[in-house]
Amino acid sequence: MKRLVLLLLFGVTAGANGFTGDKSLLARVTVYWAQGGHGADQYTRQHKSATGTRLRQGHCAVDPKKIPYGSRVLLPDGTTLSAVDTGTAVRNRKAARRSARTNYERNAIVIDKFFETKHQALAWANSNPPFVSVKVIPPNSATVAKPNITNSQRIALNPAITTTNPVTPGSGVVASATKASPPAPIGVIIRNPLGRLGR
Image 1 (cartoon, rainbow, N blue to C red):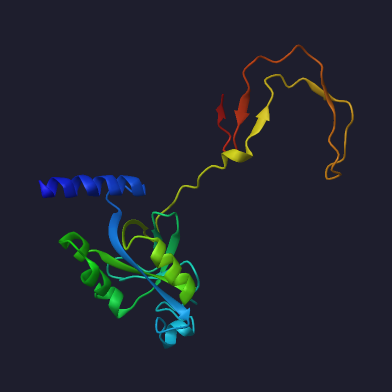
Image 2 (image 1 turned 180 degrees about the vertical axis):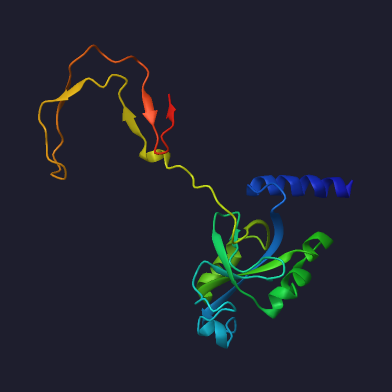
């Protein structure tokens, strides 16, 4: 019965996070920072990473054997992190082993999210759960861009429209238009930036 409840709970959690499929992993997300306190070592204070990339917000430390450098890690809150750094505590999964309640959590990978200040890091850590499902996108995978539907333009079904006041482009003045033919049908065709038509 306990296993059934755990499976149902995990299924609801994975569905709520928006990640389904084989590429989602359970991760213990920890934080580290460059300025202030004991959370920064010599390299982190100088914004140096294991790959040579200068550390900035949006970077994270991972175990390169499990998540290759250059991968993008998608968190459930919509944040996208770039895997550019590593550390011994991350590779040894120290945080997952110490704070886990189940064997499943004990086997989770550790992702260490970088912040500039201690205040930012602790604020993020206190407002997010320690274990989350993350989606990993390898560095050389092709991604499909989302079409920007908000920039769709209405086009008329009947192109017989004449302008009575032509205006030079860039002047900021809108030309007035009159219809020179019978009224257009009720339906309106909308053309999105990808060129597909829809009603």
